Image 1 (spheres, helix red, strand yellow):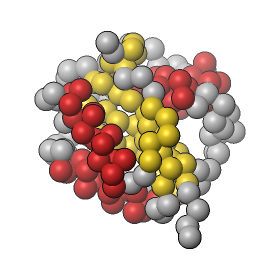
Image 2 (tube, helix red, strand yellow; image 1 turned 60 degrees about the vertical axis):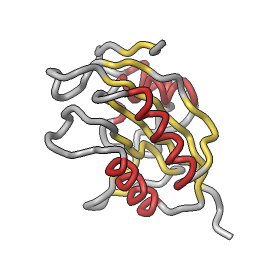
Image 3 (cartoon, one colour; image 1 turned 45 degrees about the vertical axis):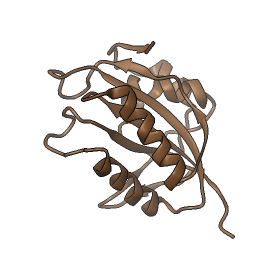
Amino acid sequence: MNSENTVYLLLGSNLGDRVQVMLSAAEMIQNEIGQIIRASSVYETAPWGVIDQPSFLNQVLAINTVLVSEEVLRLILSIEHELGRVRYERWGARVIDIDILFFQDLVVDSARLTIPHPRLHERRFTLTPLAEIAPDLVHPVLQKTISALLKDCQDDSHVSVFS
């Protein structure tokens, strides 16, 4: 039997019915990838990169899965497609975006996949929900906890709990 891996995923949406899309994505992740063991609050966040677009909802999920990282990526892309994701512009508006932040303490740098997510330590919208559910998780490359990365983060964009 394969051992379970803990994977941290970032969900984001800024088009359509953001709340429903996030709920649908979480349900599909639970059904197709693995059990959700922790979920952050949902945060409303300012857009990053391309700023002339609607605000995002973001949430981090911790899941347990027996799948390998490449299979998780394949299923994430399938879920994004099924929920209506179309890739027009880097960092542009999207119905759903699902990023692998961490996969155990695995470090991967391939053409299709980079783990840990290469810019997570620069993004308050990623670190804030991640710190809520895994403040003591250590970044396997930077060797700092998520709380320390959030404290040191230079990004001053707006992030607040969505109600």
